[in-house]
Image 1 (cartoon, rainbow, N blue to C red):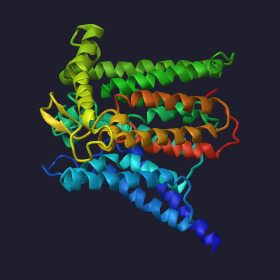
Image 2: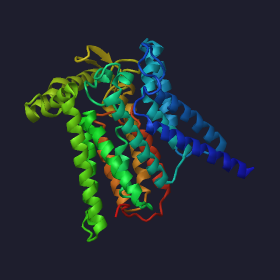
Image 3: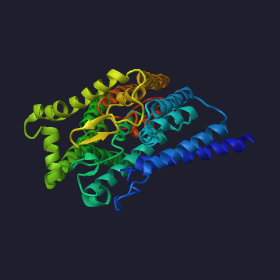
Image 4: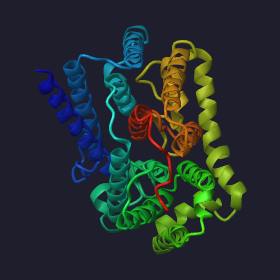
Length: 420
């Protein structure tokens, strides 16, 4: 009986890993519902997330164990309290409540991963995320360049991308960099695939025009490379060869980006505006991004918090009014606001508690380059969450939680760079 139970759990774990790979492969949430008809339908990502939640609940029941269940129970209590507060006290409709709650699905799924305690071999998980990032980035680039009408309806109109590449899994390349600091048996052909992946994802990240992700990625790339400086200083032909290939990969990526931007008027105008402030330089970028846009948004947050800092404004209410799109916005780009504004001070306290739990799990990891790099990624993620909601609406929180759970279990591995 015990063997059958173990076998069933193994099947469940393999199924979960397969769905994680499917999520990593998706370039957009709309991949299964292209804009051929003017109808609203459930997109691919929420379907896979809900399916994973059902599977993880079944796994918890099958194993009879709950590992880190307190965050899940606290969040359920928070949502139930918020429901009664929003619907019965604030007299708000249930439809916008559940619509806004659906934005928290990636975060909710990460809570179920913690509760189930599911882990995977880190080397296998990293390879899946790297391959998934390669396929996802390639699909995003191919559709962006050759089939924009399939997803975008009209290039530059979806999600306010304005000529930029729309890529749902733009945070996956951060896990690619972690690959460098984990010891695995890597063949030369796999190293070539790795650098090809580096070219693809670097090209895709730059074309997204997301300044927060680009700065975070480059910061993590340079800091992690600095920590591996001894590897690059080895007096071996292979060490210098792979360093040379890395530099070639960066040059190729930036050359492709330049070619694409030059060939597309929409992309050219978008990048001039976002990275050169309409030829006004750094001041133009700061004025366009913050003075004329972000500061107004942050001010509206503060105005709402003056009257709702304790219990929040409840789910189902807009976060702010967009002066660009002339409409109420039901989501935010700041992770801490995503918890503070709807749930009040209790929501912010919960998010801090959750991040602290992840950091405590991280401290269980063995000392070495991997642990150092994950700590760096943890703090860079917090920095990015101030202008990119990676802890609530993006797949980053799913992959990051799984990775920390898995690496905390592998306590006794020897850490060494995999690229020699």
